[in-house]
Length: 498
Image: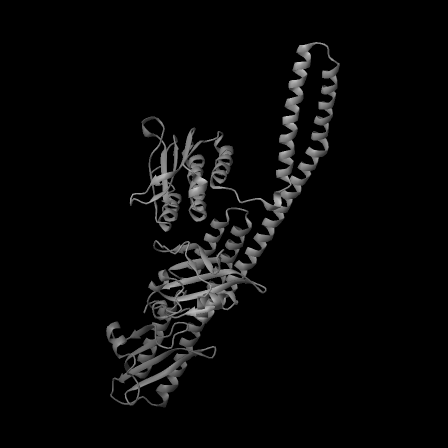
């Protein structure tokens, strides 16, 4: 099991404990002394500090001192046993007496103070990190950006703050249960998009608003998914606001790592509560924005109907009267064509008014529309609009999960073009008829520019993000020469199965 003796210790803690061991050996004339330190939440030693003996010997004999030839005293702080002080084999062969016991008890108190201070310092540092993480999550959720990116921030913060191998966010699935919508892991994961059915024991508990703690995923029958069997301790927390469960937050440690301690659980529960509150606030903000859009649409529809339509209708009547009163055939014919054009225009405006009034039942934008929206957004900082082309039935074939990641990949590639490449030409192609290297059908995004390319030592985190997004879906991402003279610029190719 991995050890964690001093999680965020005071800088001189180990040297302090070594000094205390040396003092004990000098005052009691013992051959050696050692302090066994218990990490938070551990009943057995997680590390050892020693004097007068090498580390291998100290670890081998740590549990032996005691009885006639040894002395063992607990090290306490704040009512908790944080370790044990062990001495053995007085150099004169005599047993330890009461004076030795009193001396070691004083030194054990000093060691307890040092360990207690280190524990308090570590707890304060952890709380500060969790608070900073909560702020980052709240900012991401309320920034008005892409929801998937915001949930990815939640997963990444949960993984880093808890010292886990993976952080996962689940939201309610359409067919029931919970769907994994964001994954942050230290190795490629296939969990993204998996749906845990509602009859799962763990999902039942989470949807009831109860936290679930698994000591070892491999040996627990309540496995979340097949992908989680390779992990060790797991902490599963409901994203709960009042009586409503919005989803779940899962932190998975690698197999062999220590279980989550009480302080870690308490901090994570607070973090999950803050994330849930931020989700509710983001949802309310989104609803307010949609309501504002609907109100604008209603106002525009009213203005079109009450002003534009009426004026056009009146103009049409005037033209019809002029047509009947004209004696010149060419004039009557020209006015008649104008009246017909006005009738067509009126029908188009009435259709637009009807569409505007159907805002409350609007369908989510298709992938082509979302791609065009990203291209239009990038046109402002670029100073020109990138060219684009769609191949195949993009909206029909590409699923929501792949589409969301494709849009995020497009945004990253366009961001590179206007932030770093200083491009004057950008071409975007979305091909829904692509064939992946393994023979599966998929969608391929190609973004090519004629800029300065990626400089040596330049920012490559964006390219890594693209690759991780693609690999999580079973695809890949590459980059190569651009479309400028002699291959100047960068071409990014991102592809994934539907």
